[in-house]
Image (cartoon, rainbow, N blue to C red; front, top):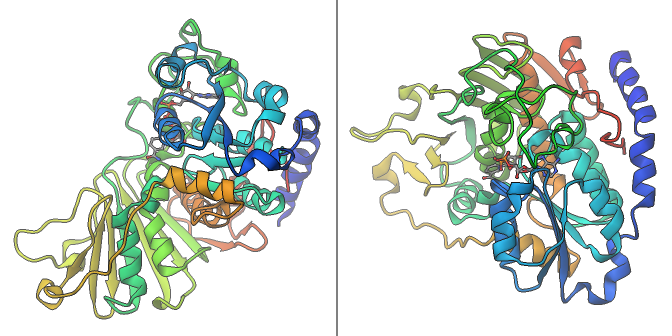
Length: 445
Ligand SMILES: NC(=O)c1ccc[n+]([C@@H]2O[C@H](COP(=O)([O-])OP(=O)(O)OC[C@H]3O[C@@H](n4cnc5c(N)ncnc54)[C@H](O)[C@@H]3O)[C@@H](O)[C@H]2O)c1
């Protein structure tokens, strides 16, 4: 790693003292409850509205789950969770929750905005808790590597919240490629309709507005540099546009749509990244973009492989797909180009094999889907790993966030040394990590 990154890491090492001290005060790891663990999983949900509601209702439908705490920075967020699971204690600050309830807790769900995934998930794993964490696993490349290391070191059961990973459609797409239905794969094109900035319709900071009653803005900011609250621009949902909090269209959909590409091909770390877009400011993510990664070859590719991402209305050129008359590319998904055919895997849709006449009578393998949330609970109870643990989700998220680094330096090809977390472009290397506000640091592992 270069001097710049070493300096940043040293500074972070200093800053993490307070987070480390906090971790030391959090009561005992999950194994202290080993005797009851196989019967019941005591879970805290952190971020309970939006996707948090979906996560907690799906995890909570597992008969072995008991919620012991709900945590949200917005007092109004608890309504649905309380109606479905009455009597569960409320917290606003995840650090207080982990400190006070550490002994009663086996697992946490992290469904906050992206910039707070790593601070919460790291603290939970340091305390020995199993973690289900929303996608993208982290806000930076460095954080993804640290969470992966901590998951391995702690031995807890982890799962990233890209739930379509466990759906029949994506599993079938992965199996078809691995069965060699279209032969070895030459290149992949993935796309989504949304673009990096579209929810706030601005490229500069919005005007300050009063913080709504019941919202703890300081806790919402968490690790991010302080800035005033603004109406209808950050909390809820619209934080996605902003580099300080979200991860743009690539971060929002990359961990979904690129997941079966990773799963099918067995790729892990790209060797280079190049992004093209119309430019951006330091505040928001770019508009329509193309990001190209080159990966080393695997058993399922013809050689080193190019994966191309497009968003904001850009799609692969029509001649690449060469679809039959009257067929169109789906709104979002991936096109796998193999030596013996092509496969389109729509985002949450059944795979389509081409040329159609060649695959007319192709017998699809019998593949079933399952509940991504219940799979995590079952694995945690059994002390096992999931298929989407941080060992898998880490490199997938690193790849997505490397794309977001390239997106801020359009037109510059970045060579990536994954082993040493090193970029060929110094400006890119600075973006591997970020500064943390005191009290919300992420510990280097
Ligand atoms: N897997 C999926 O299909 C899917 C879909 C949507 C969102 N997501 C992911 O889920 C996460 C949340 O997205 P969203 O759209 O629900 O956002 P949101 O802003 O609508 O909801 C976030 C919730 O977390 C709460 N919150 C914010 N900061 C918090 C903190 N520090 N501590 C505790 N609670 C906090 C908010 O009050 C809100 O209730 C993001 O990482 C997003 O990428 C995943």
